Image (cartoon, rainbow, N blue to C red; front, top):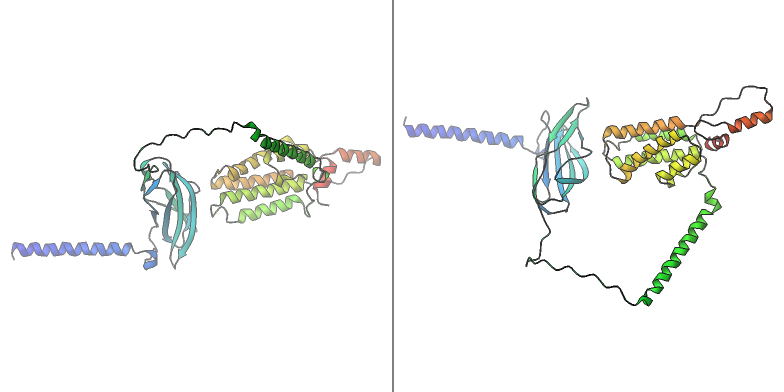
Length: 360
């Protein structure tokens, strides 16, 4: 056999081996909707930006697609560190499930305030099975070009406009000044009238039909069993636990807690004779809820469950417990009545306050 025929047969063998490897790679990369079976395979995630170049400060949308076995549950991260990019929002989409495989999608919105070829770093996504065993998959880094807002074609810097001149004729301003003074006087009069209004100043929230602590504890149990935390809805979770405690305060201490800001709630508790230590505990709890509601703070899962436990502790600590029947004594009826009226329930409320807070 000649040297040329040997070389030809060796080349045919190598070509066949390469073709077999390409065919196996094509089978391994078959997508979920195309008949691929992920049973026994490791999860995989893809990330696709809607564009590869943005202006500084513009939002960028990243589409995430996670293919995994159907018995695994995706746990999206509560917070991400994507420096030099800043995450804006994570929108979790619906899942497509077949017999043994599933595809879960999400859209991540980010932005950047630096210029140049910037890289969105890789981040991890966790998956858990029924035995709470965690599997982690990582995204690929993505390079995005961030440019400044374009200049005009000439490239010239335009001059700064000068300040506008104020009208020199002061007589034209007098009508406006008089109108402003009239509006200020009307606002002052209306505020004084509202403060003197007897139907609001002396009113209290209605007495609940059941003990306030029972209503609050049942609402907290329902919140703990809700899927808000599993869906990553941290802000609605804290809004609801704050609403439950404020509703409890309205029924327990008869203050308009749902309509007040946190400092006013604490001040009203002080006027109701609540112990300073208890007021401080309620203040810390409501401040923690306000950070999530108004300051966009996103605590982790453990902190979210801890705030629910703190709410239960506050209710159990301050719930109204009827006093035991008074023992027979040699006191006269007048003296016994005076003694009962001066007792408190430990939170600074008198017997009259306890009557208003308890269920009739």
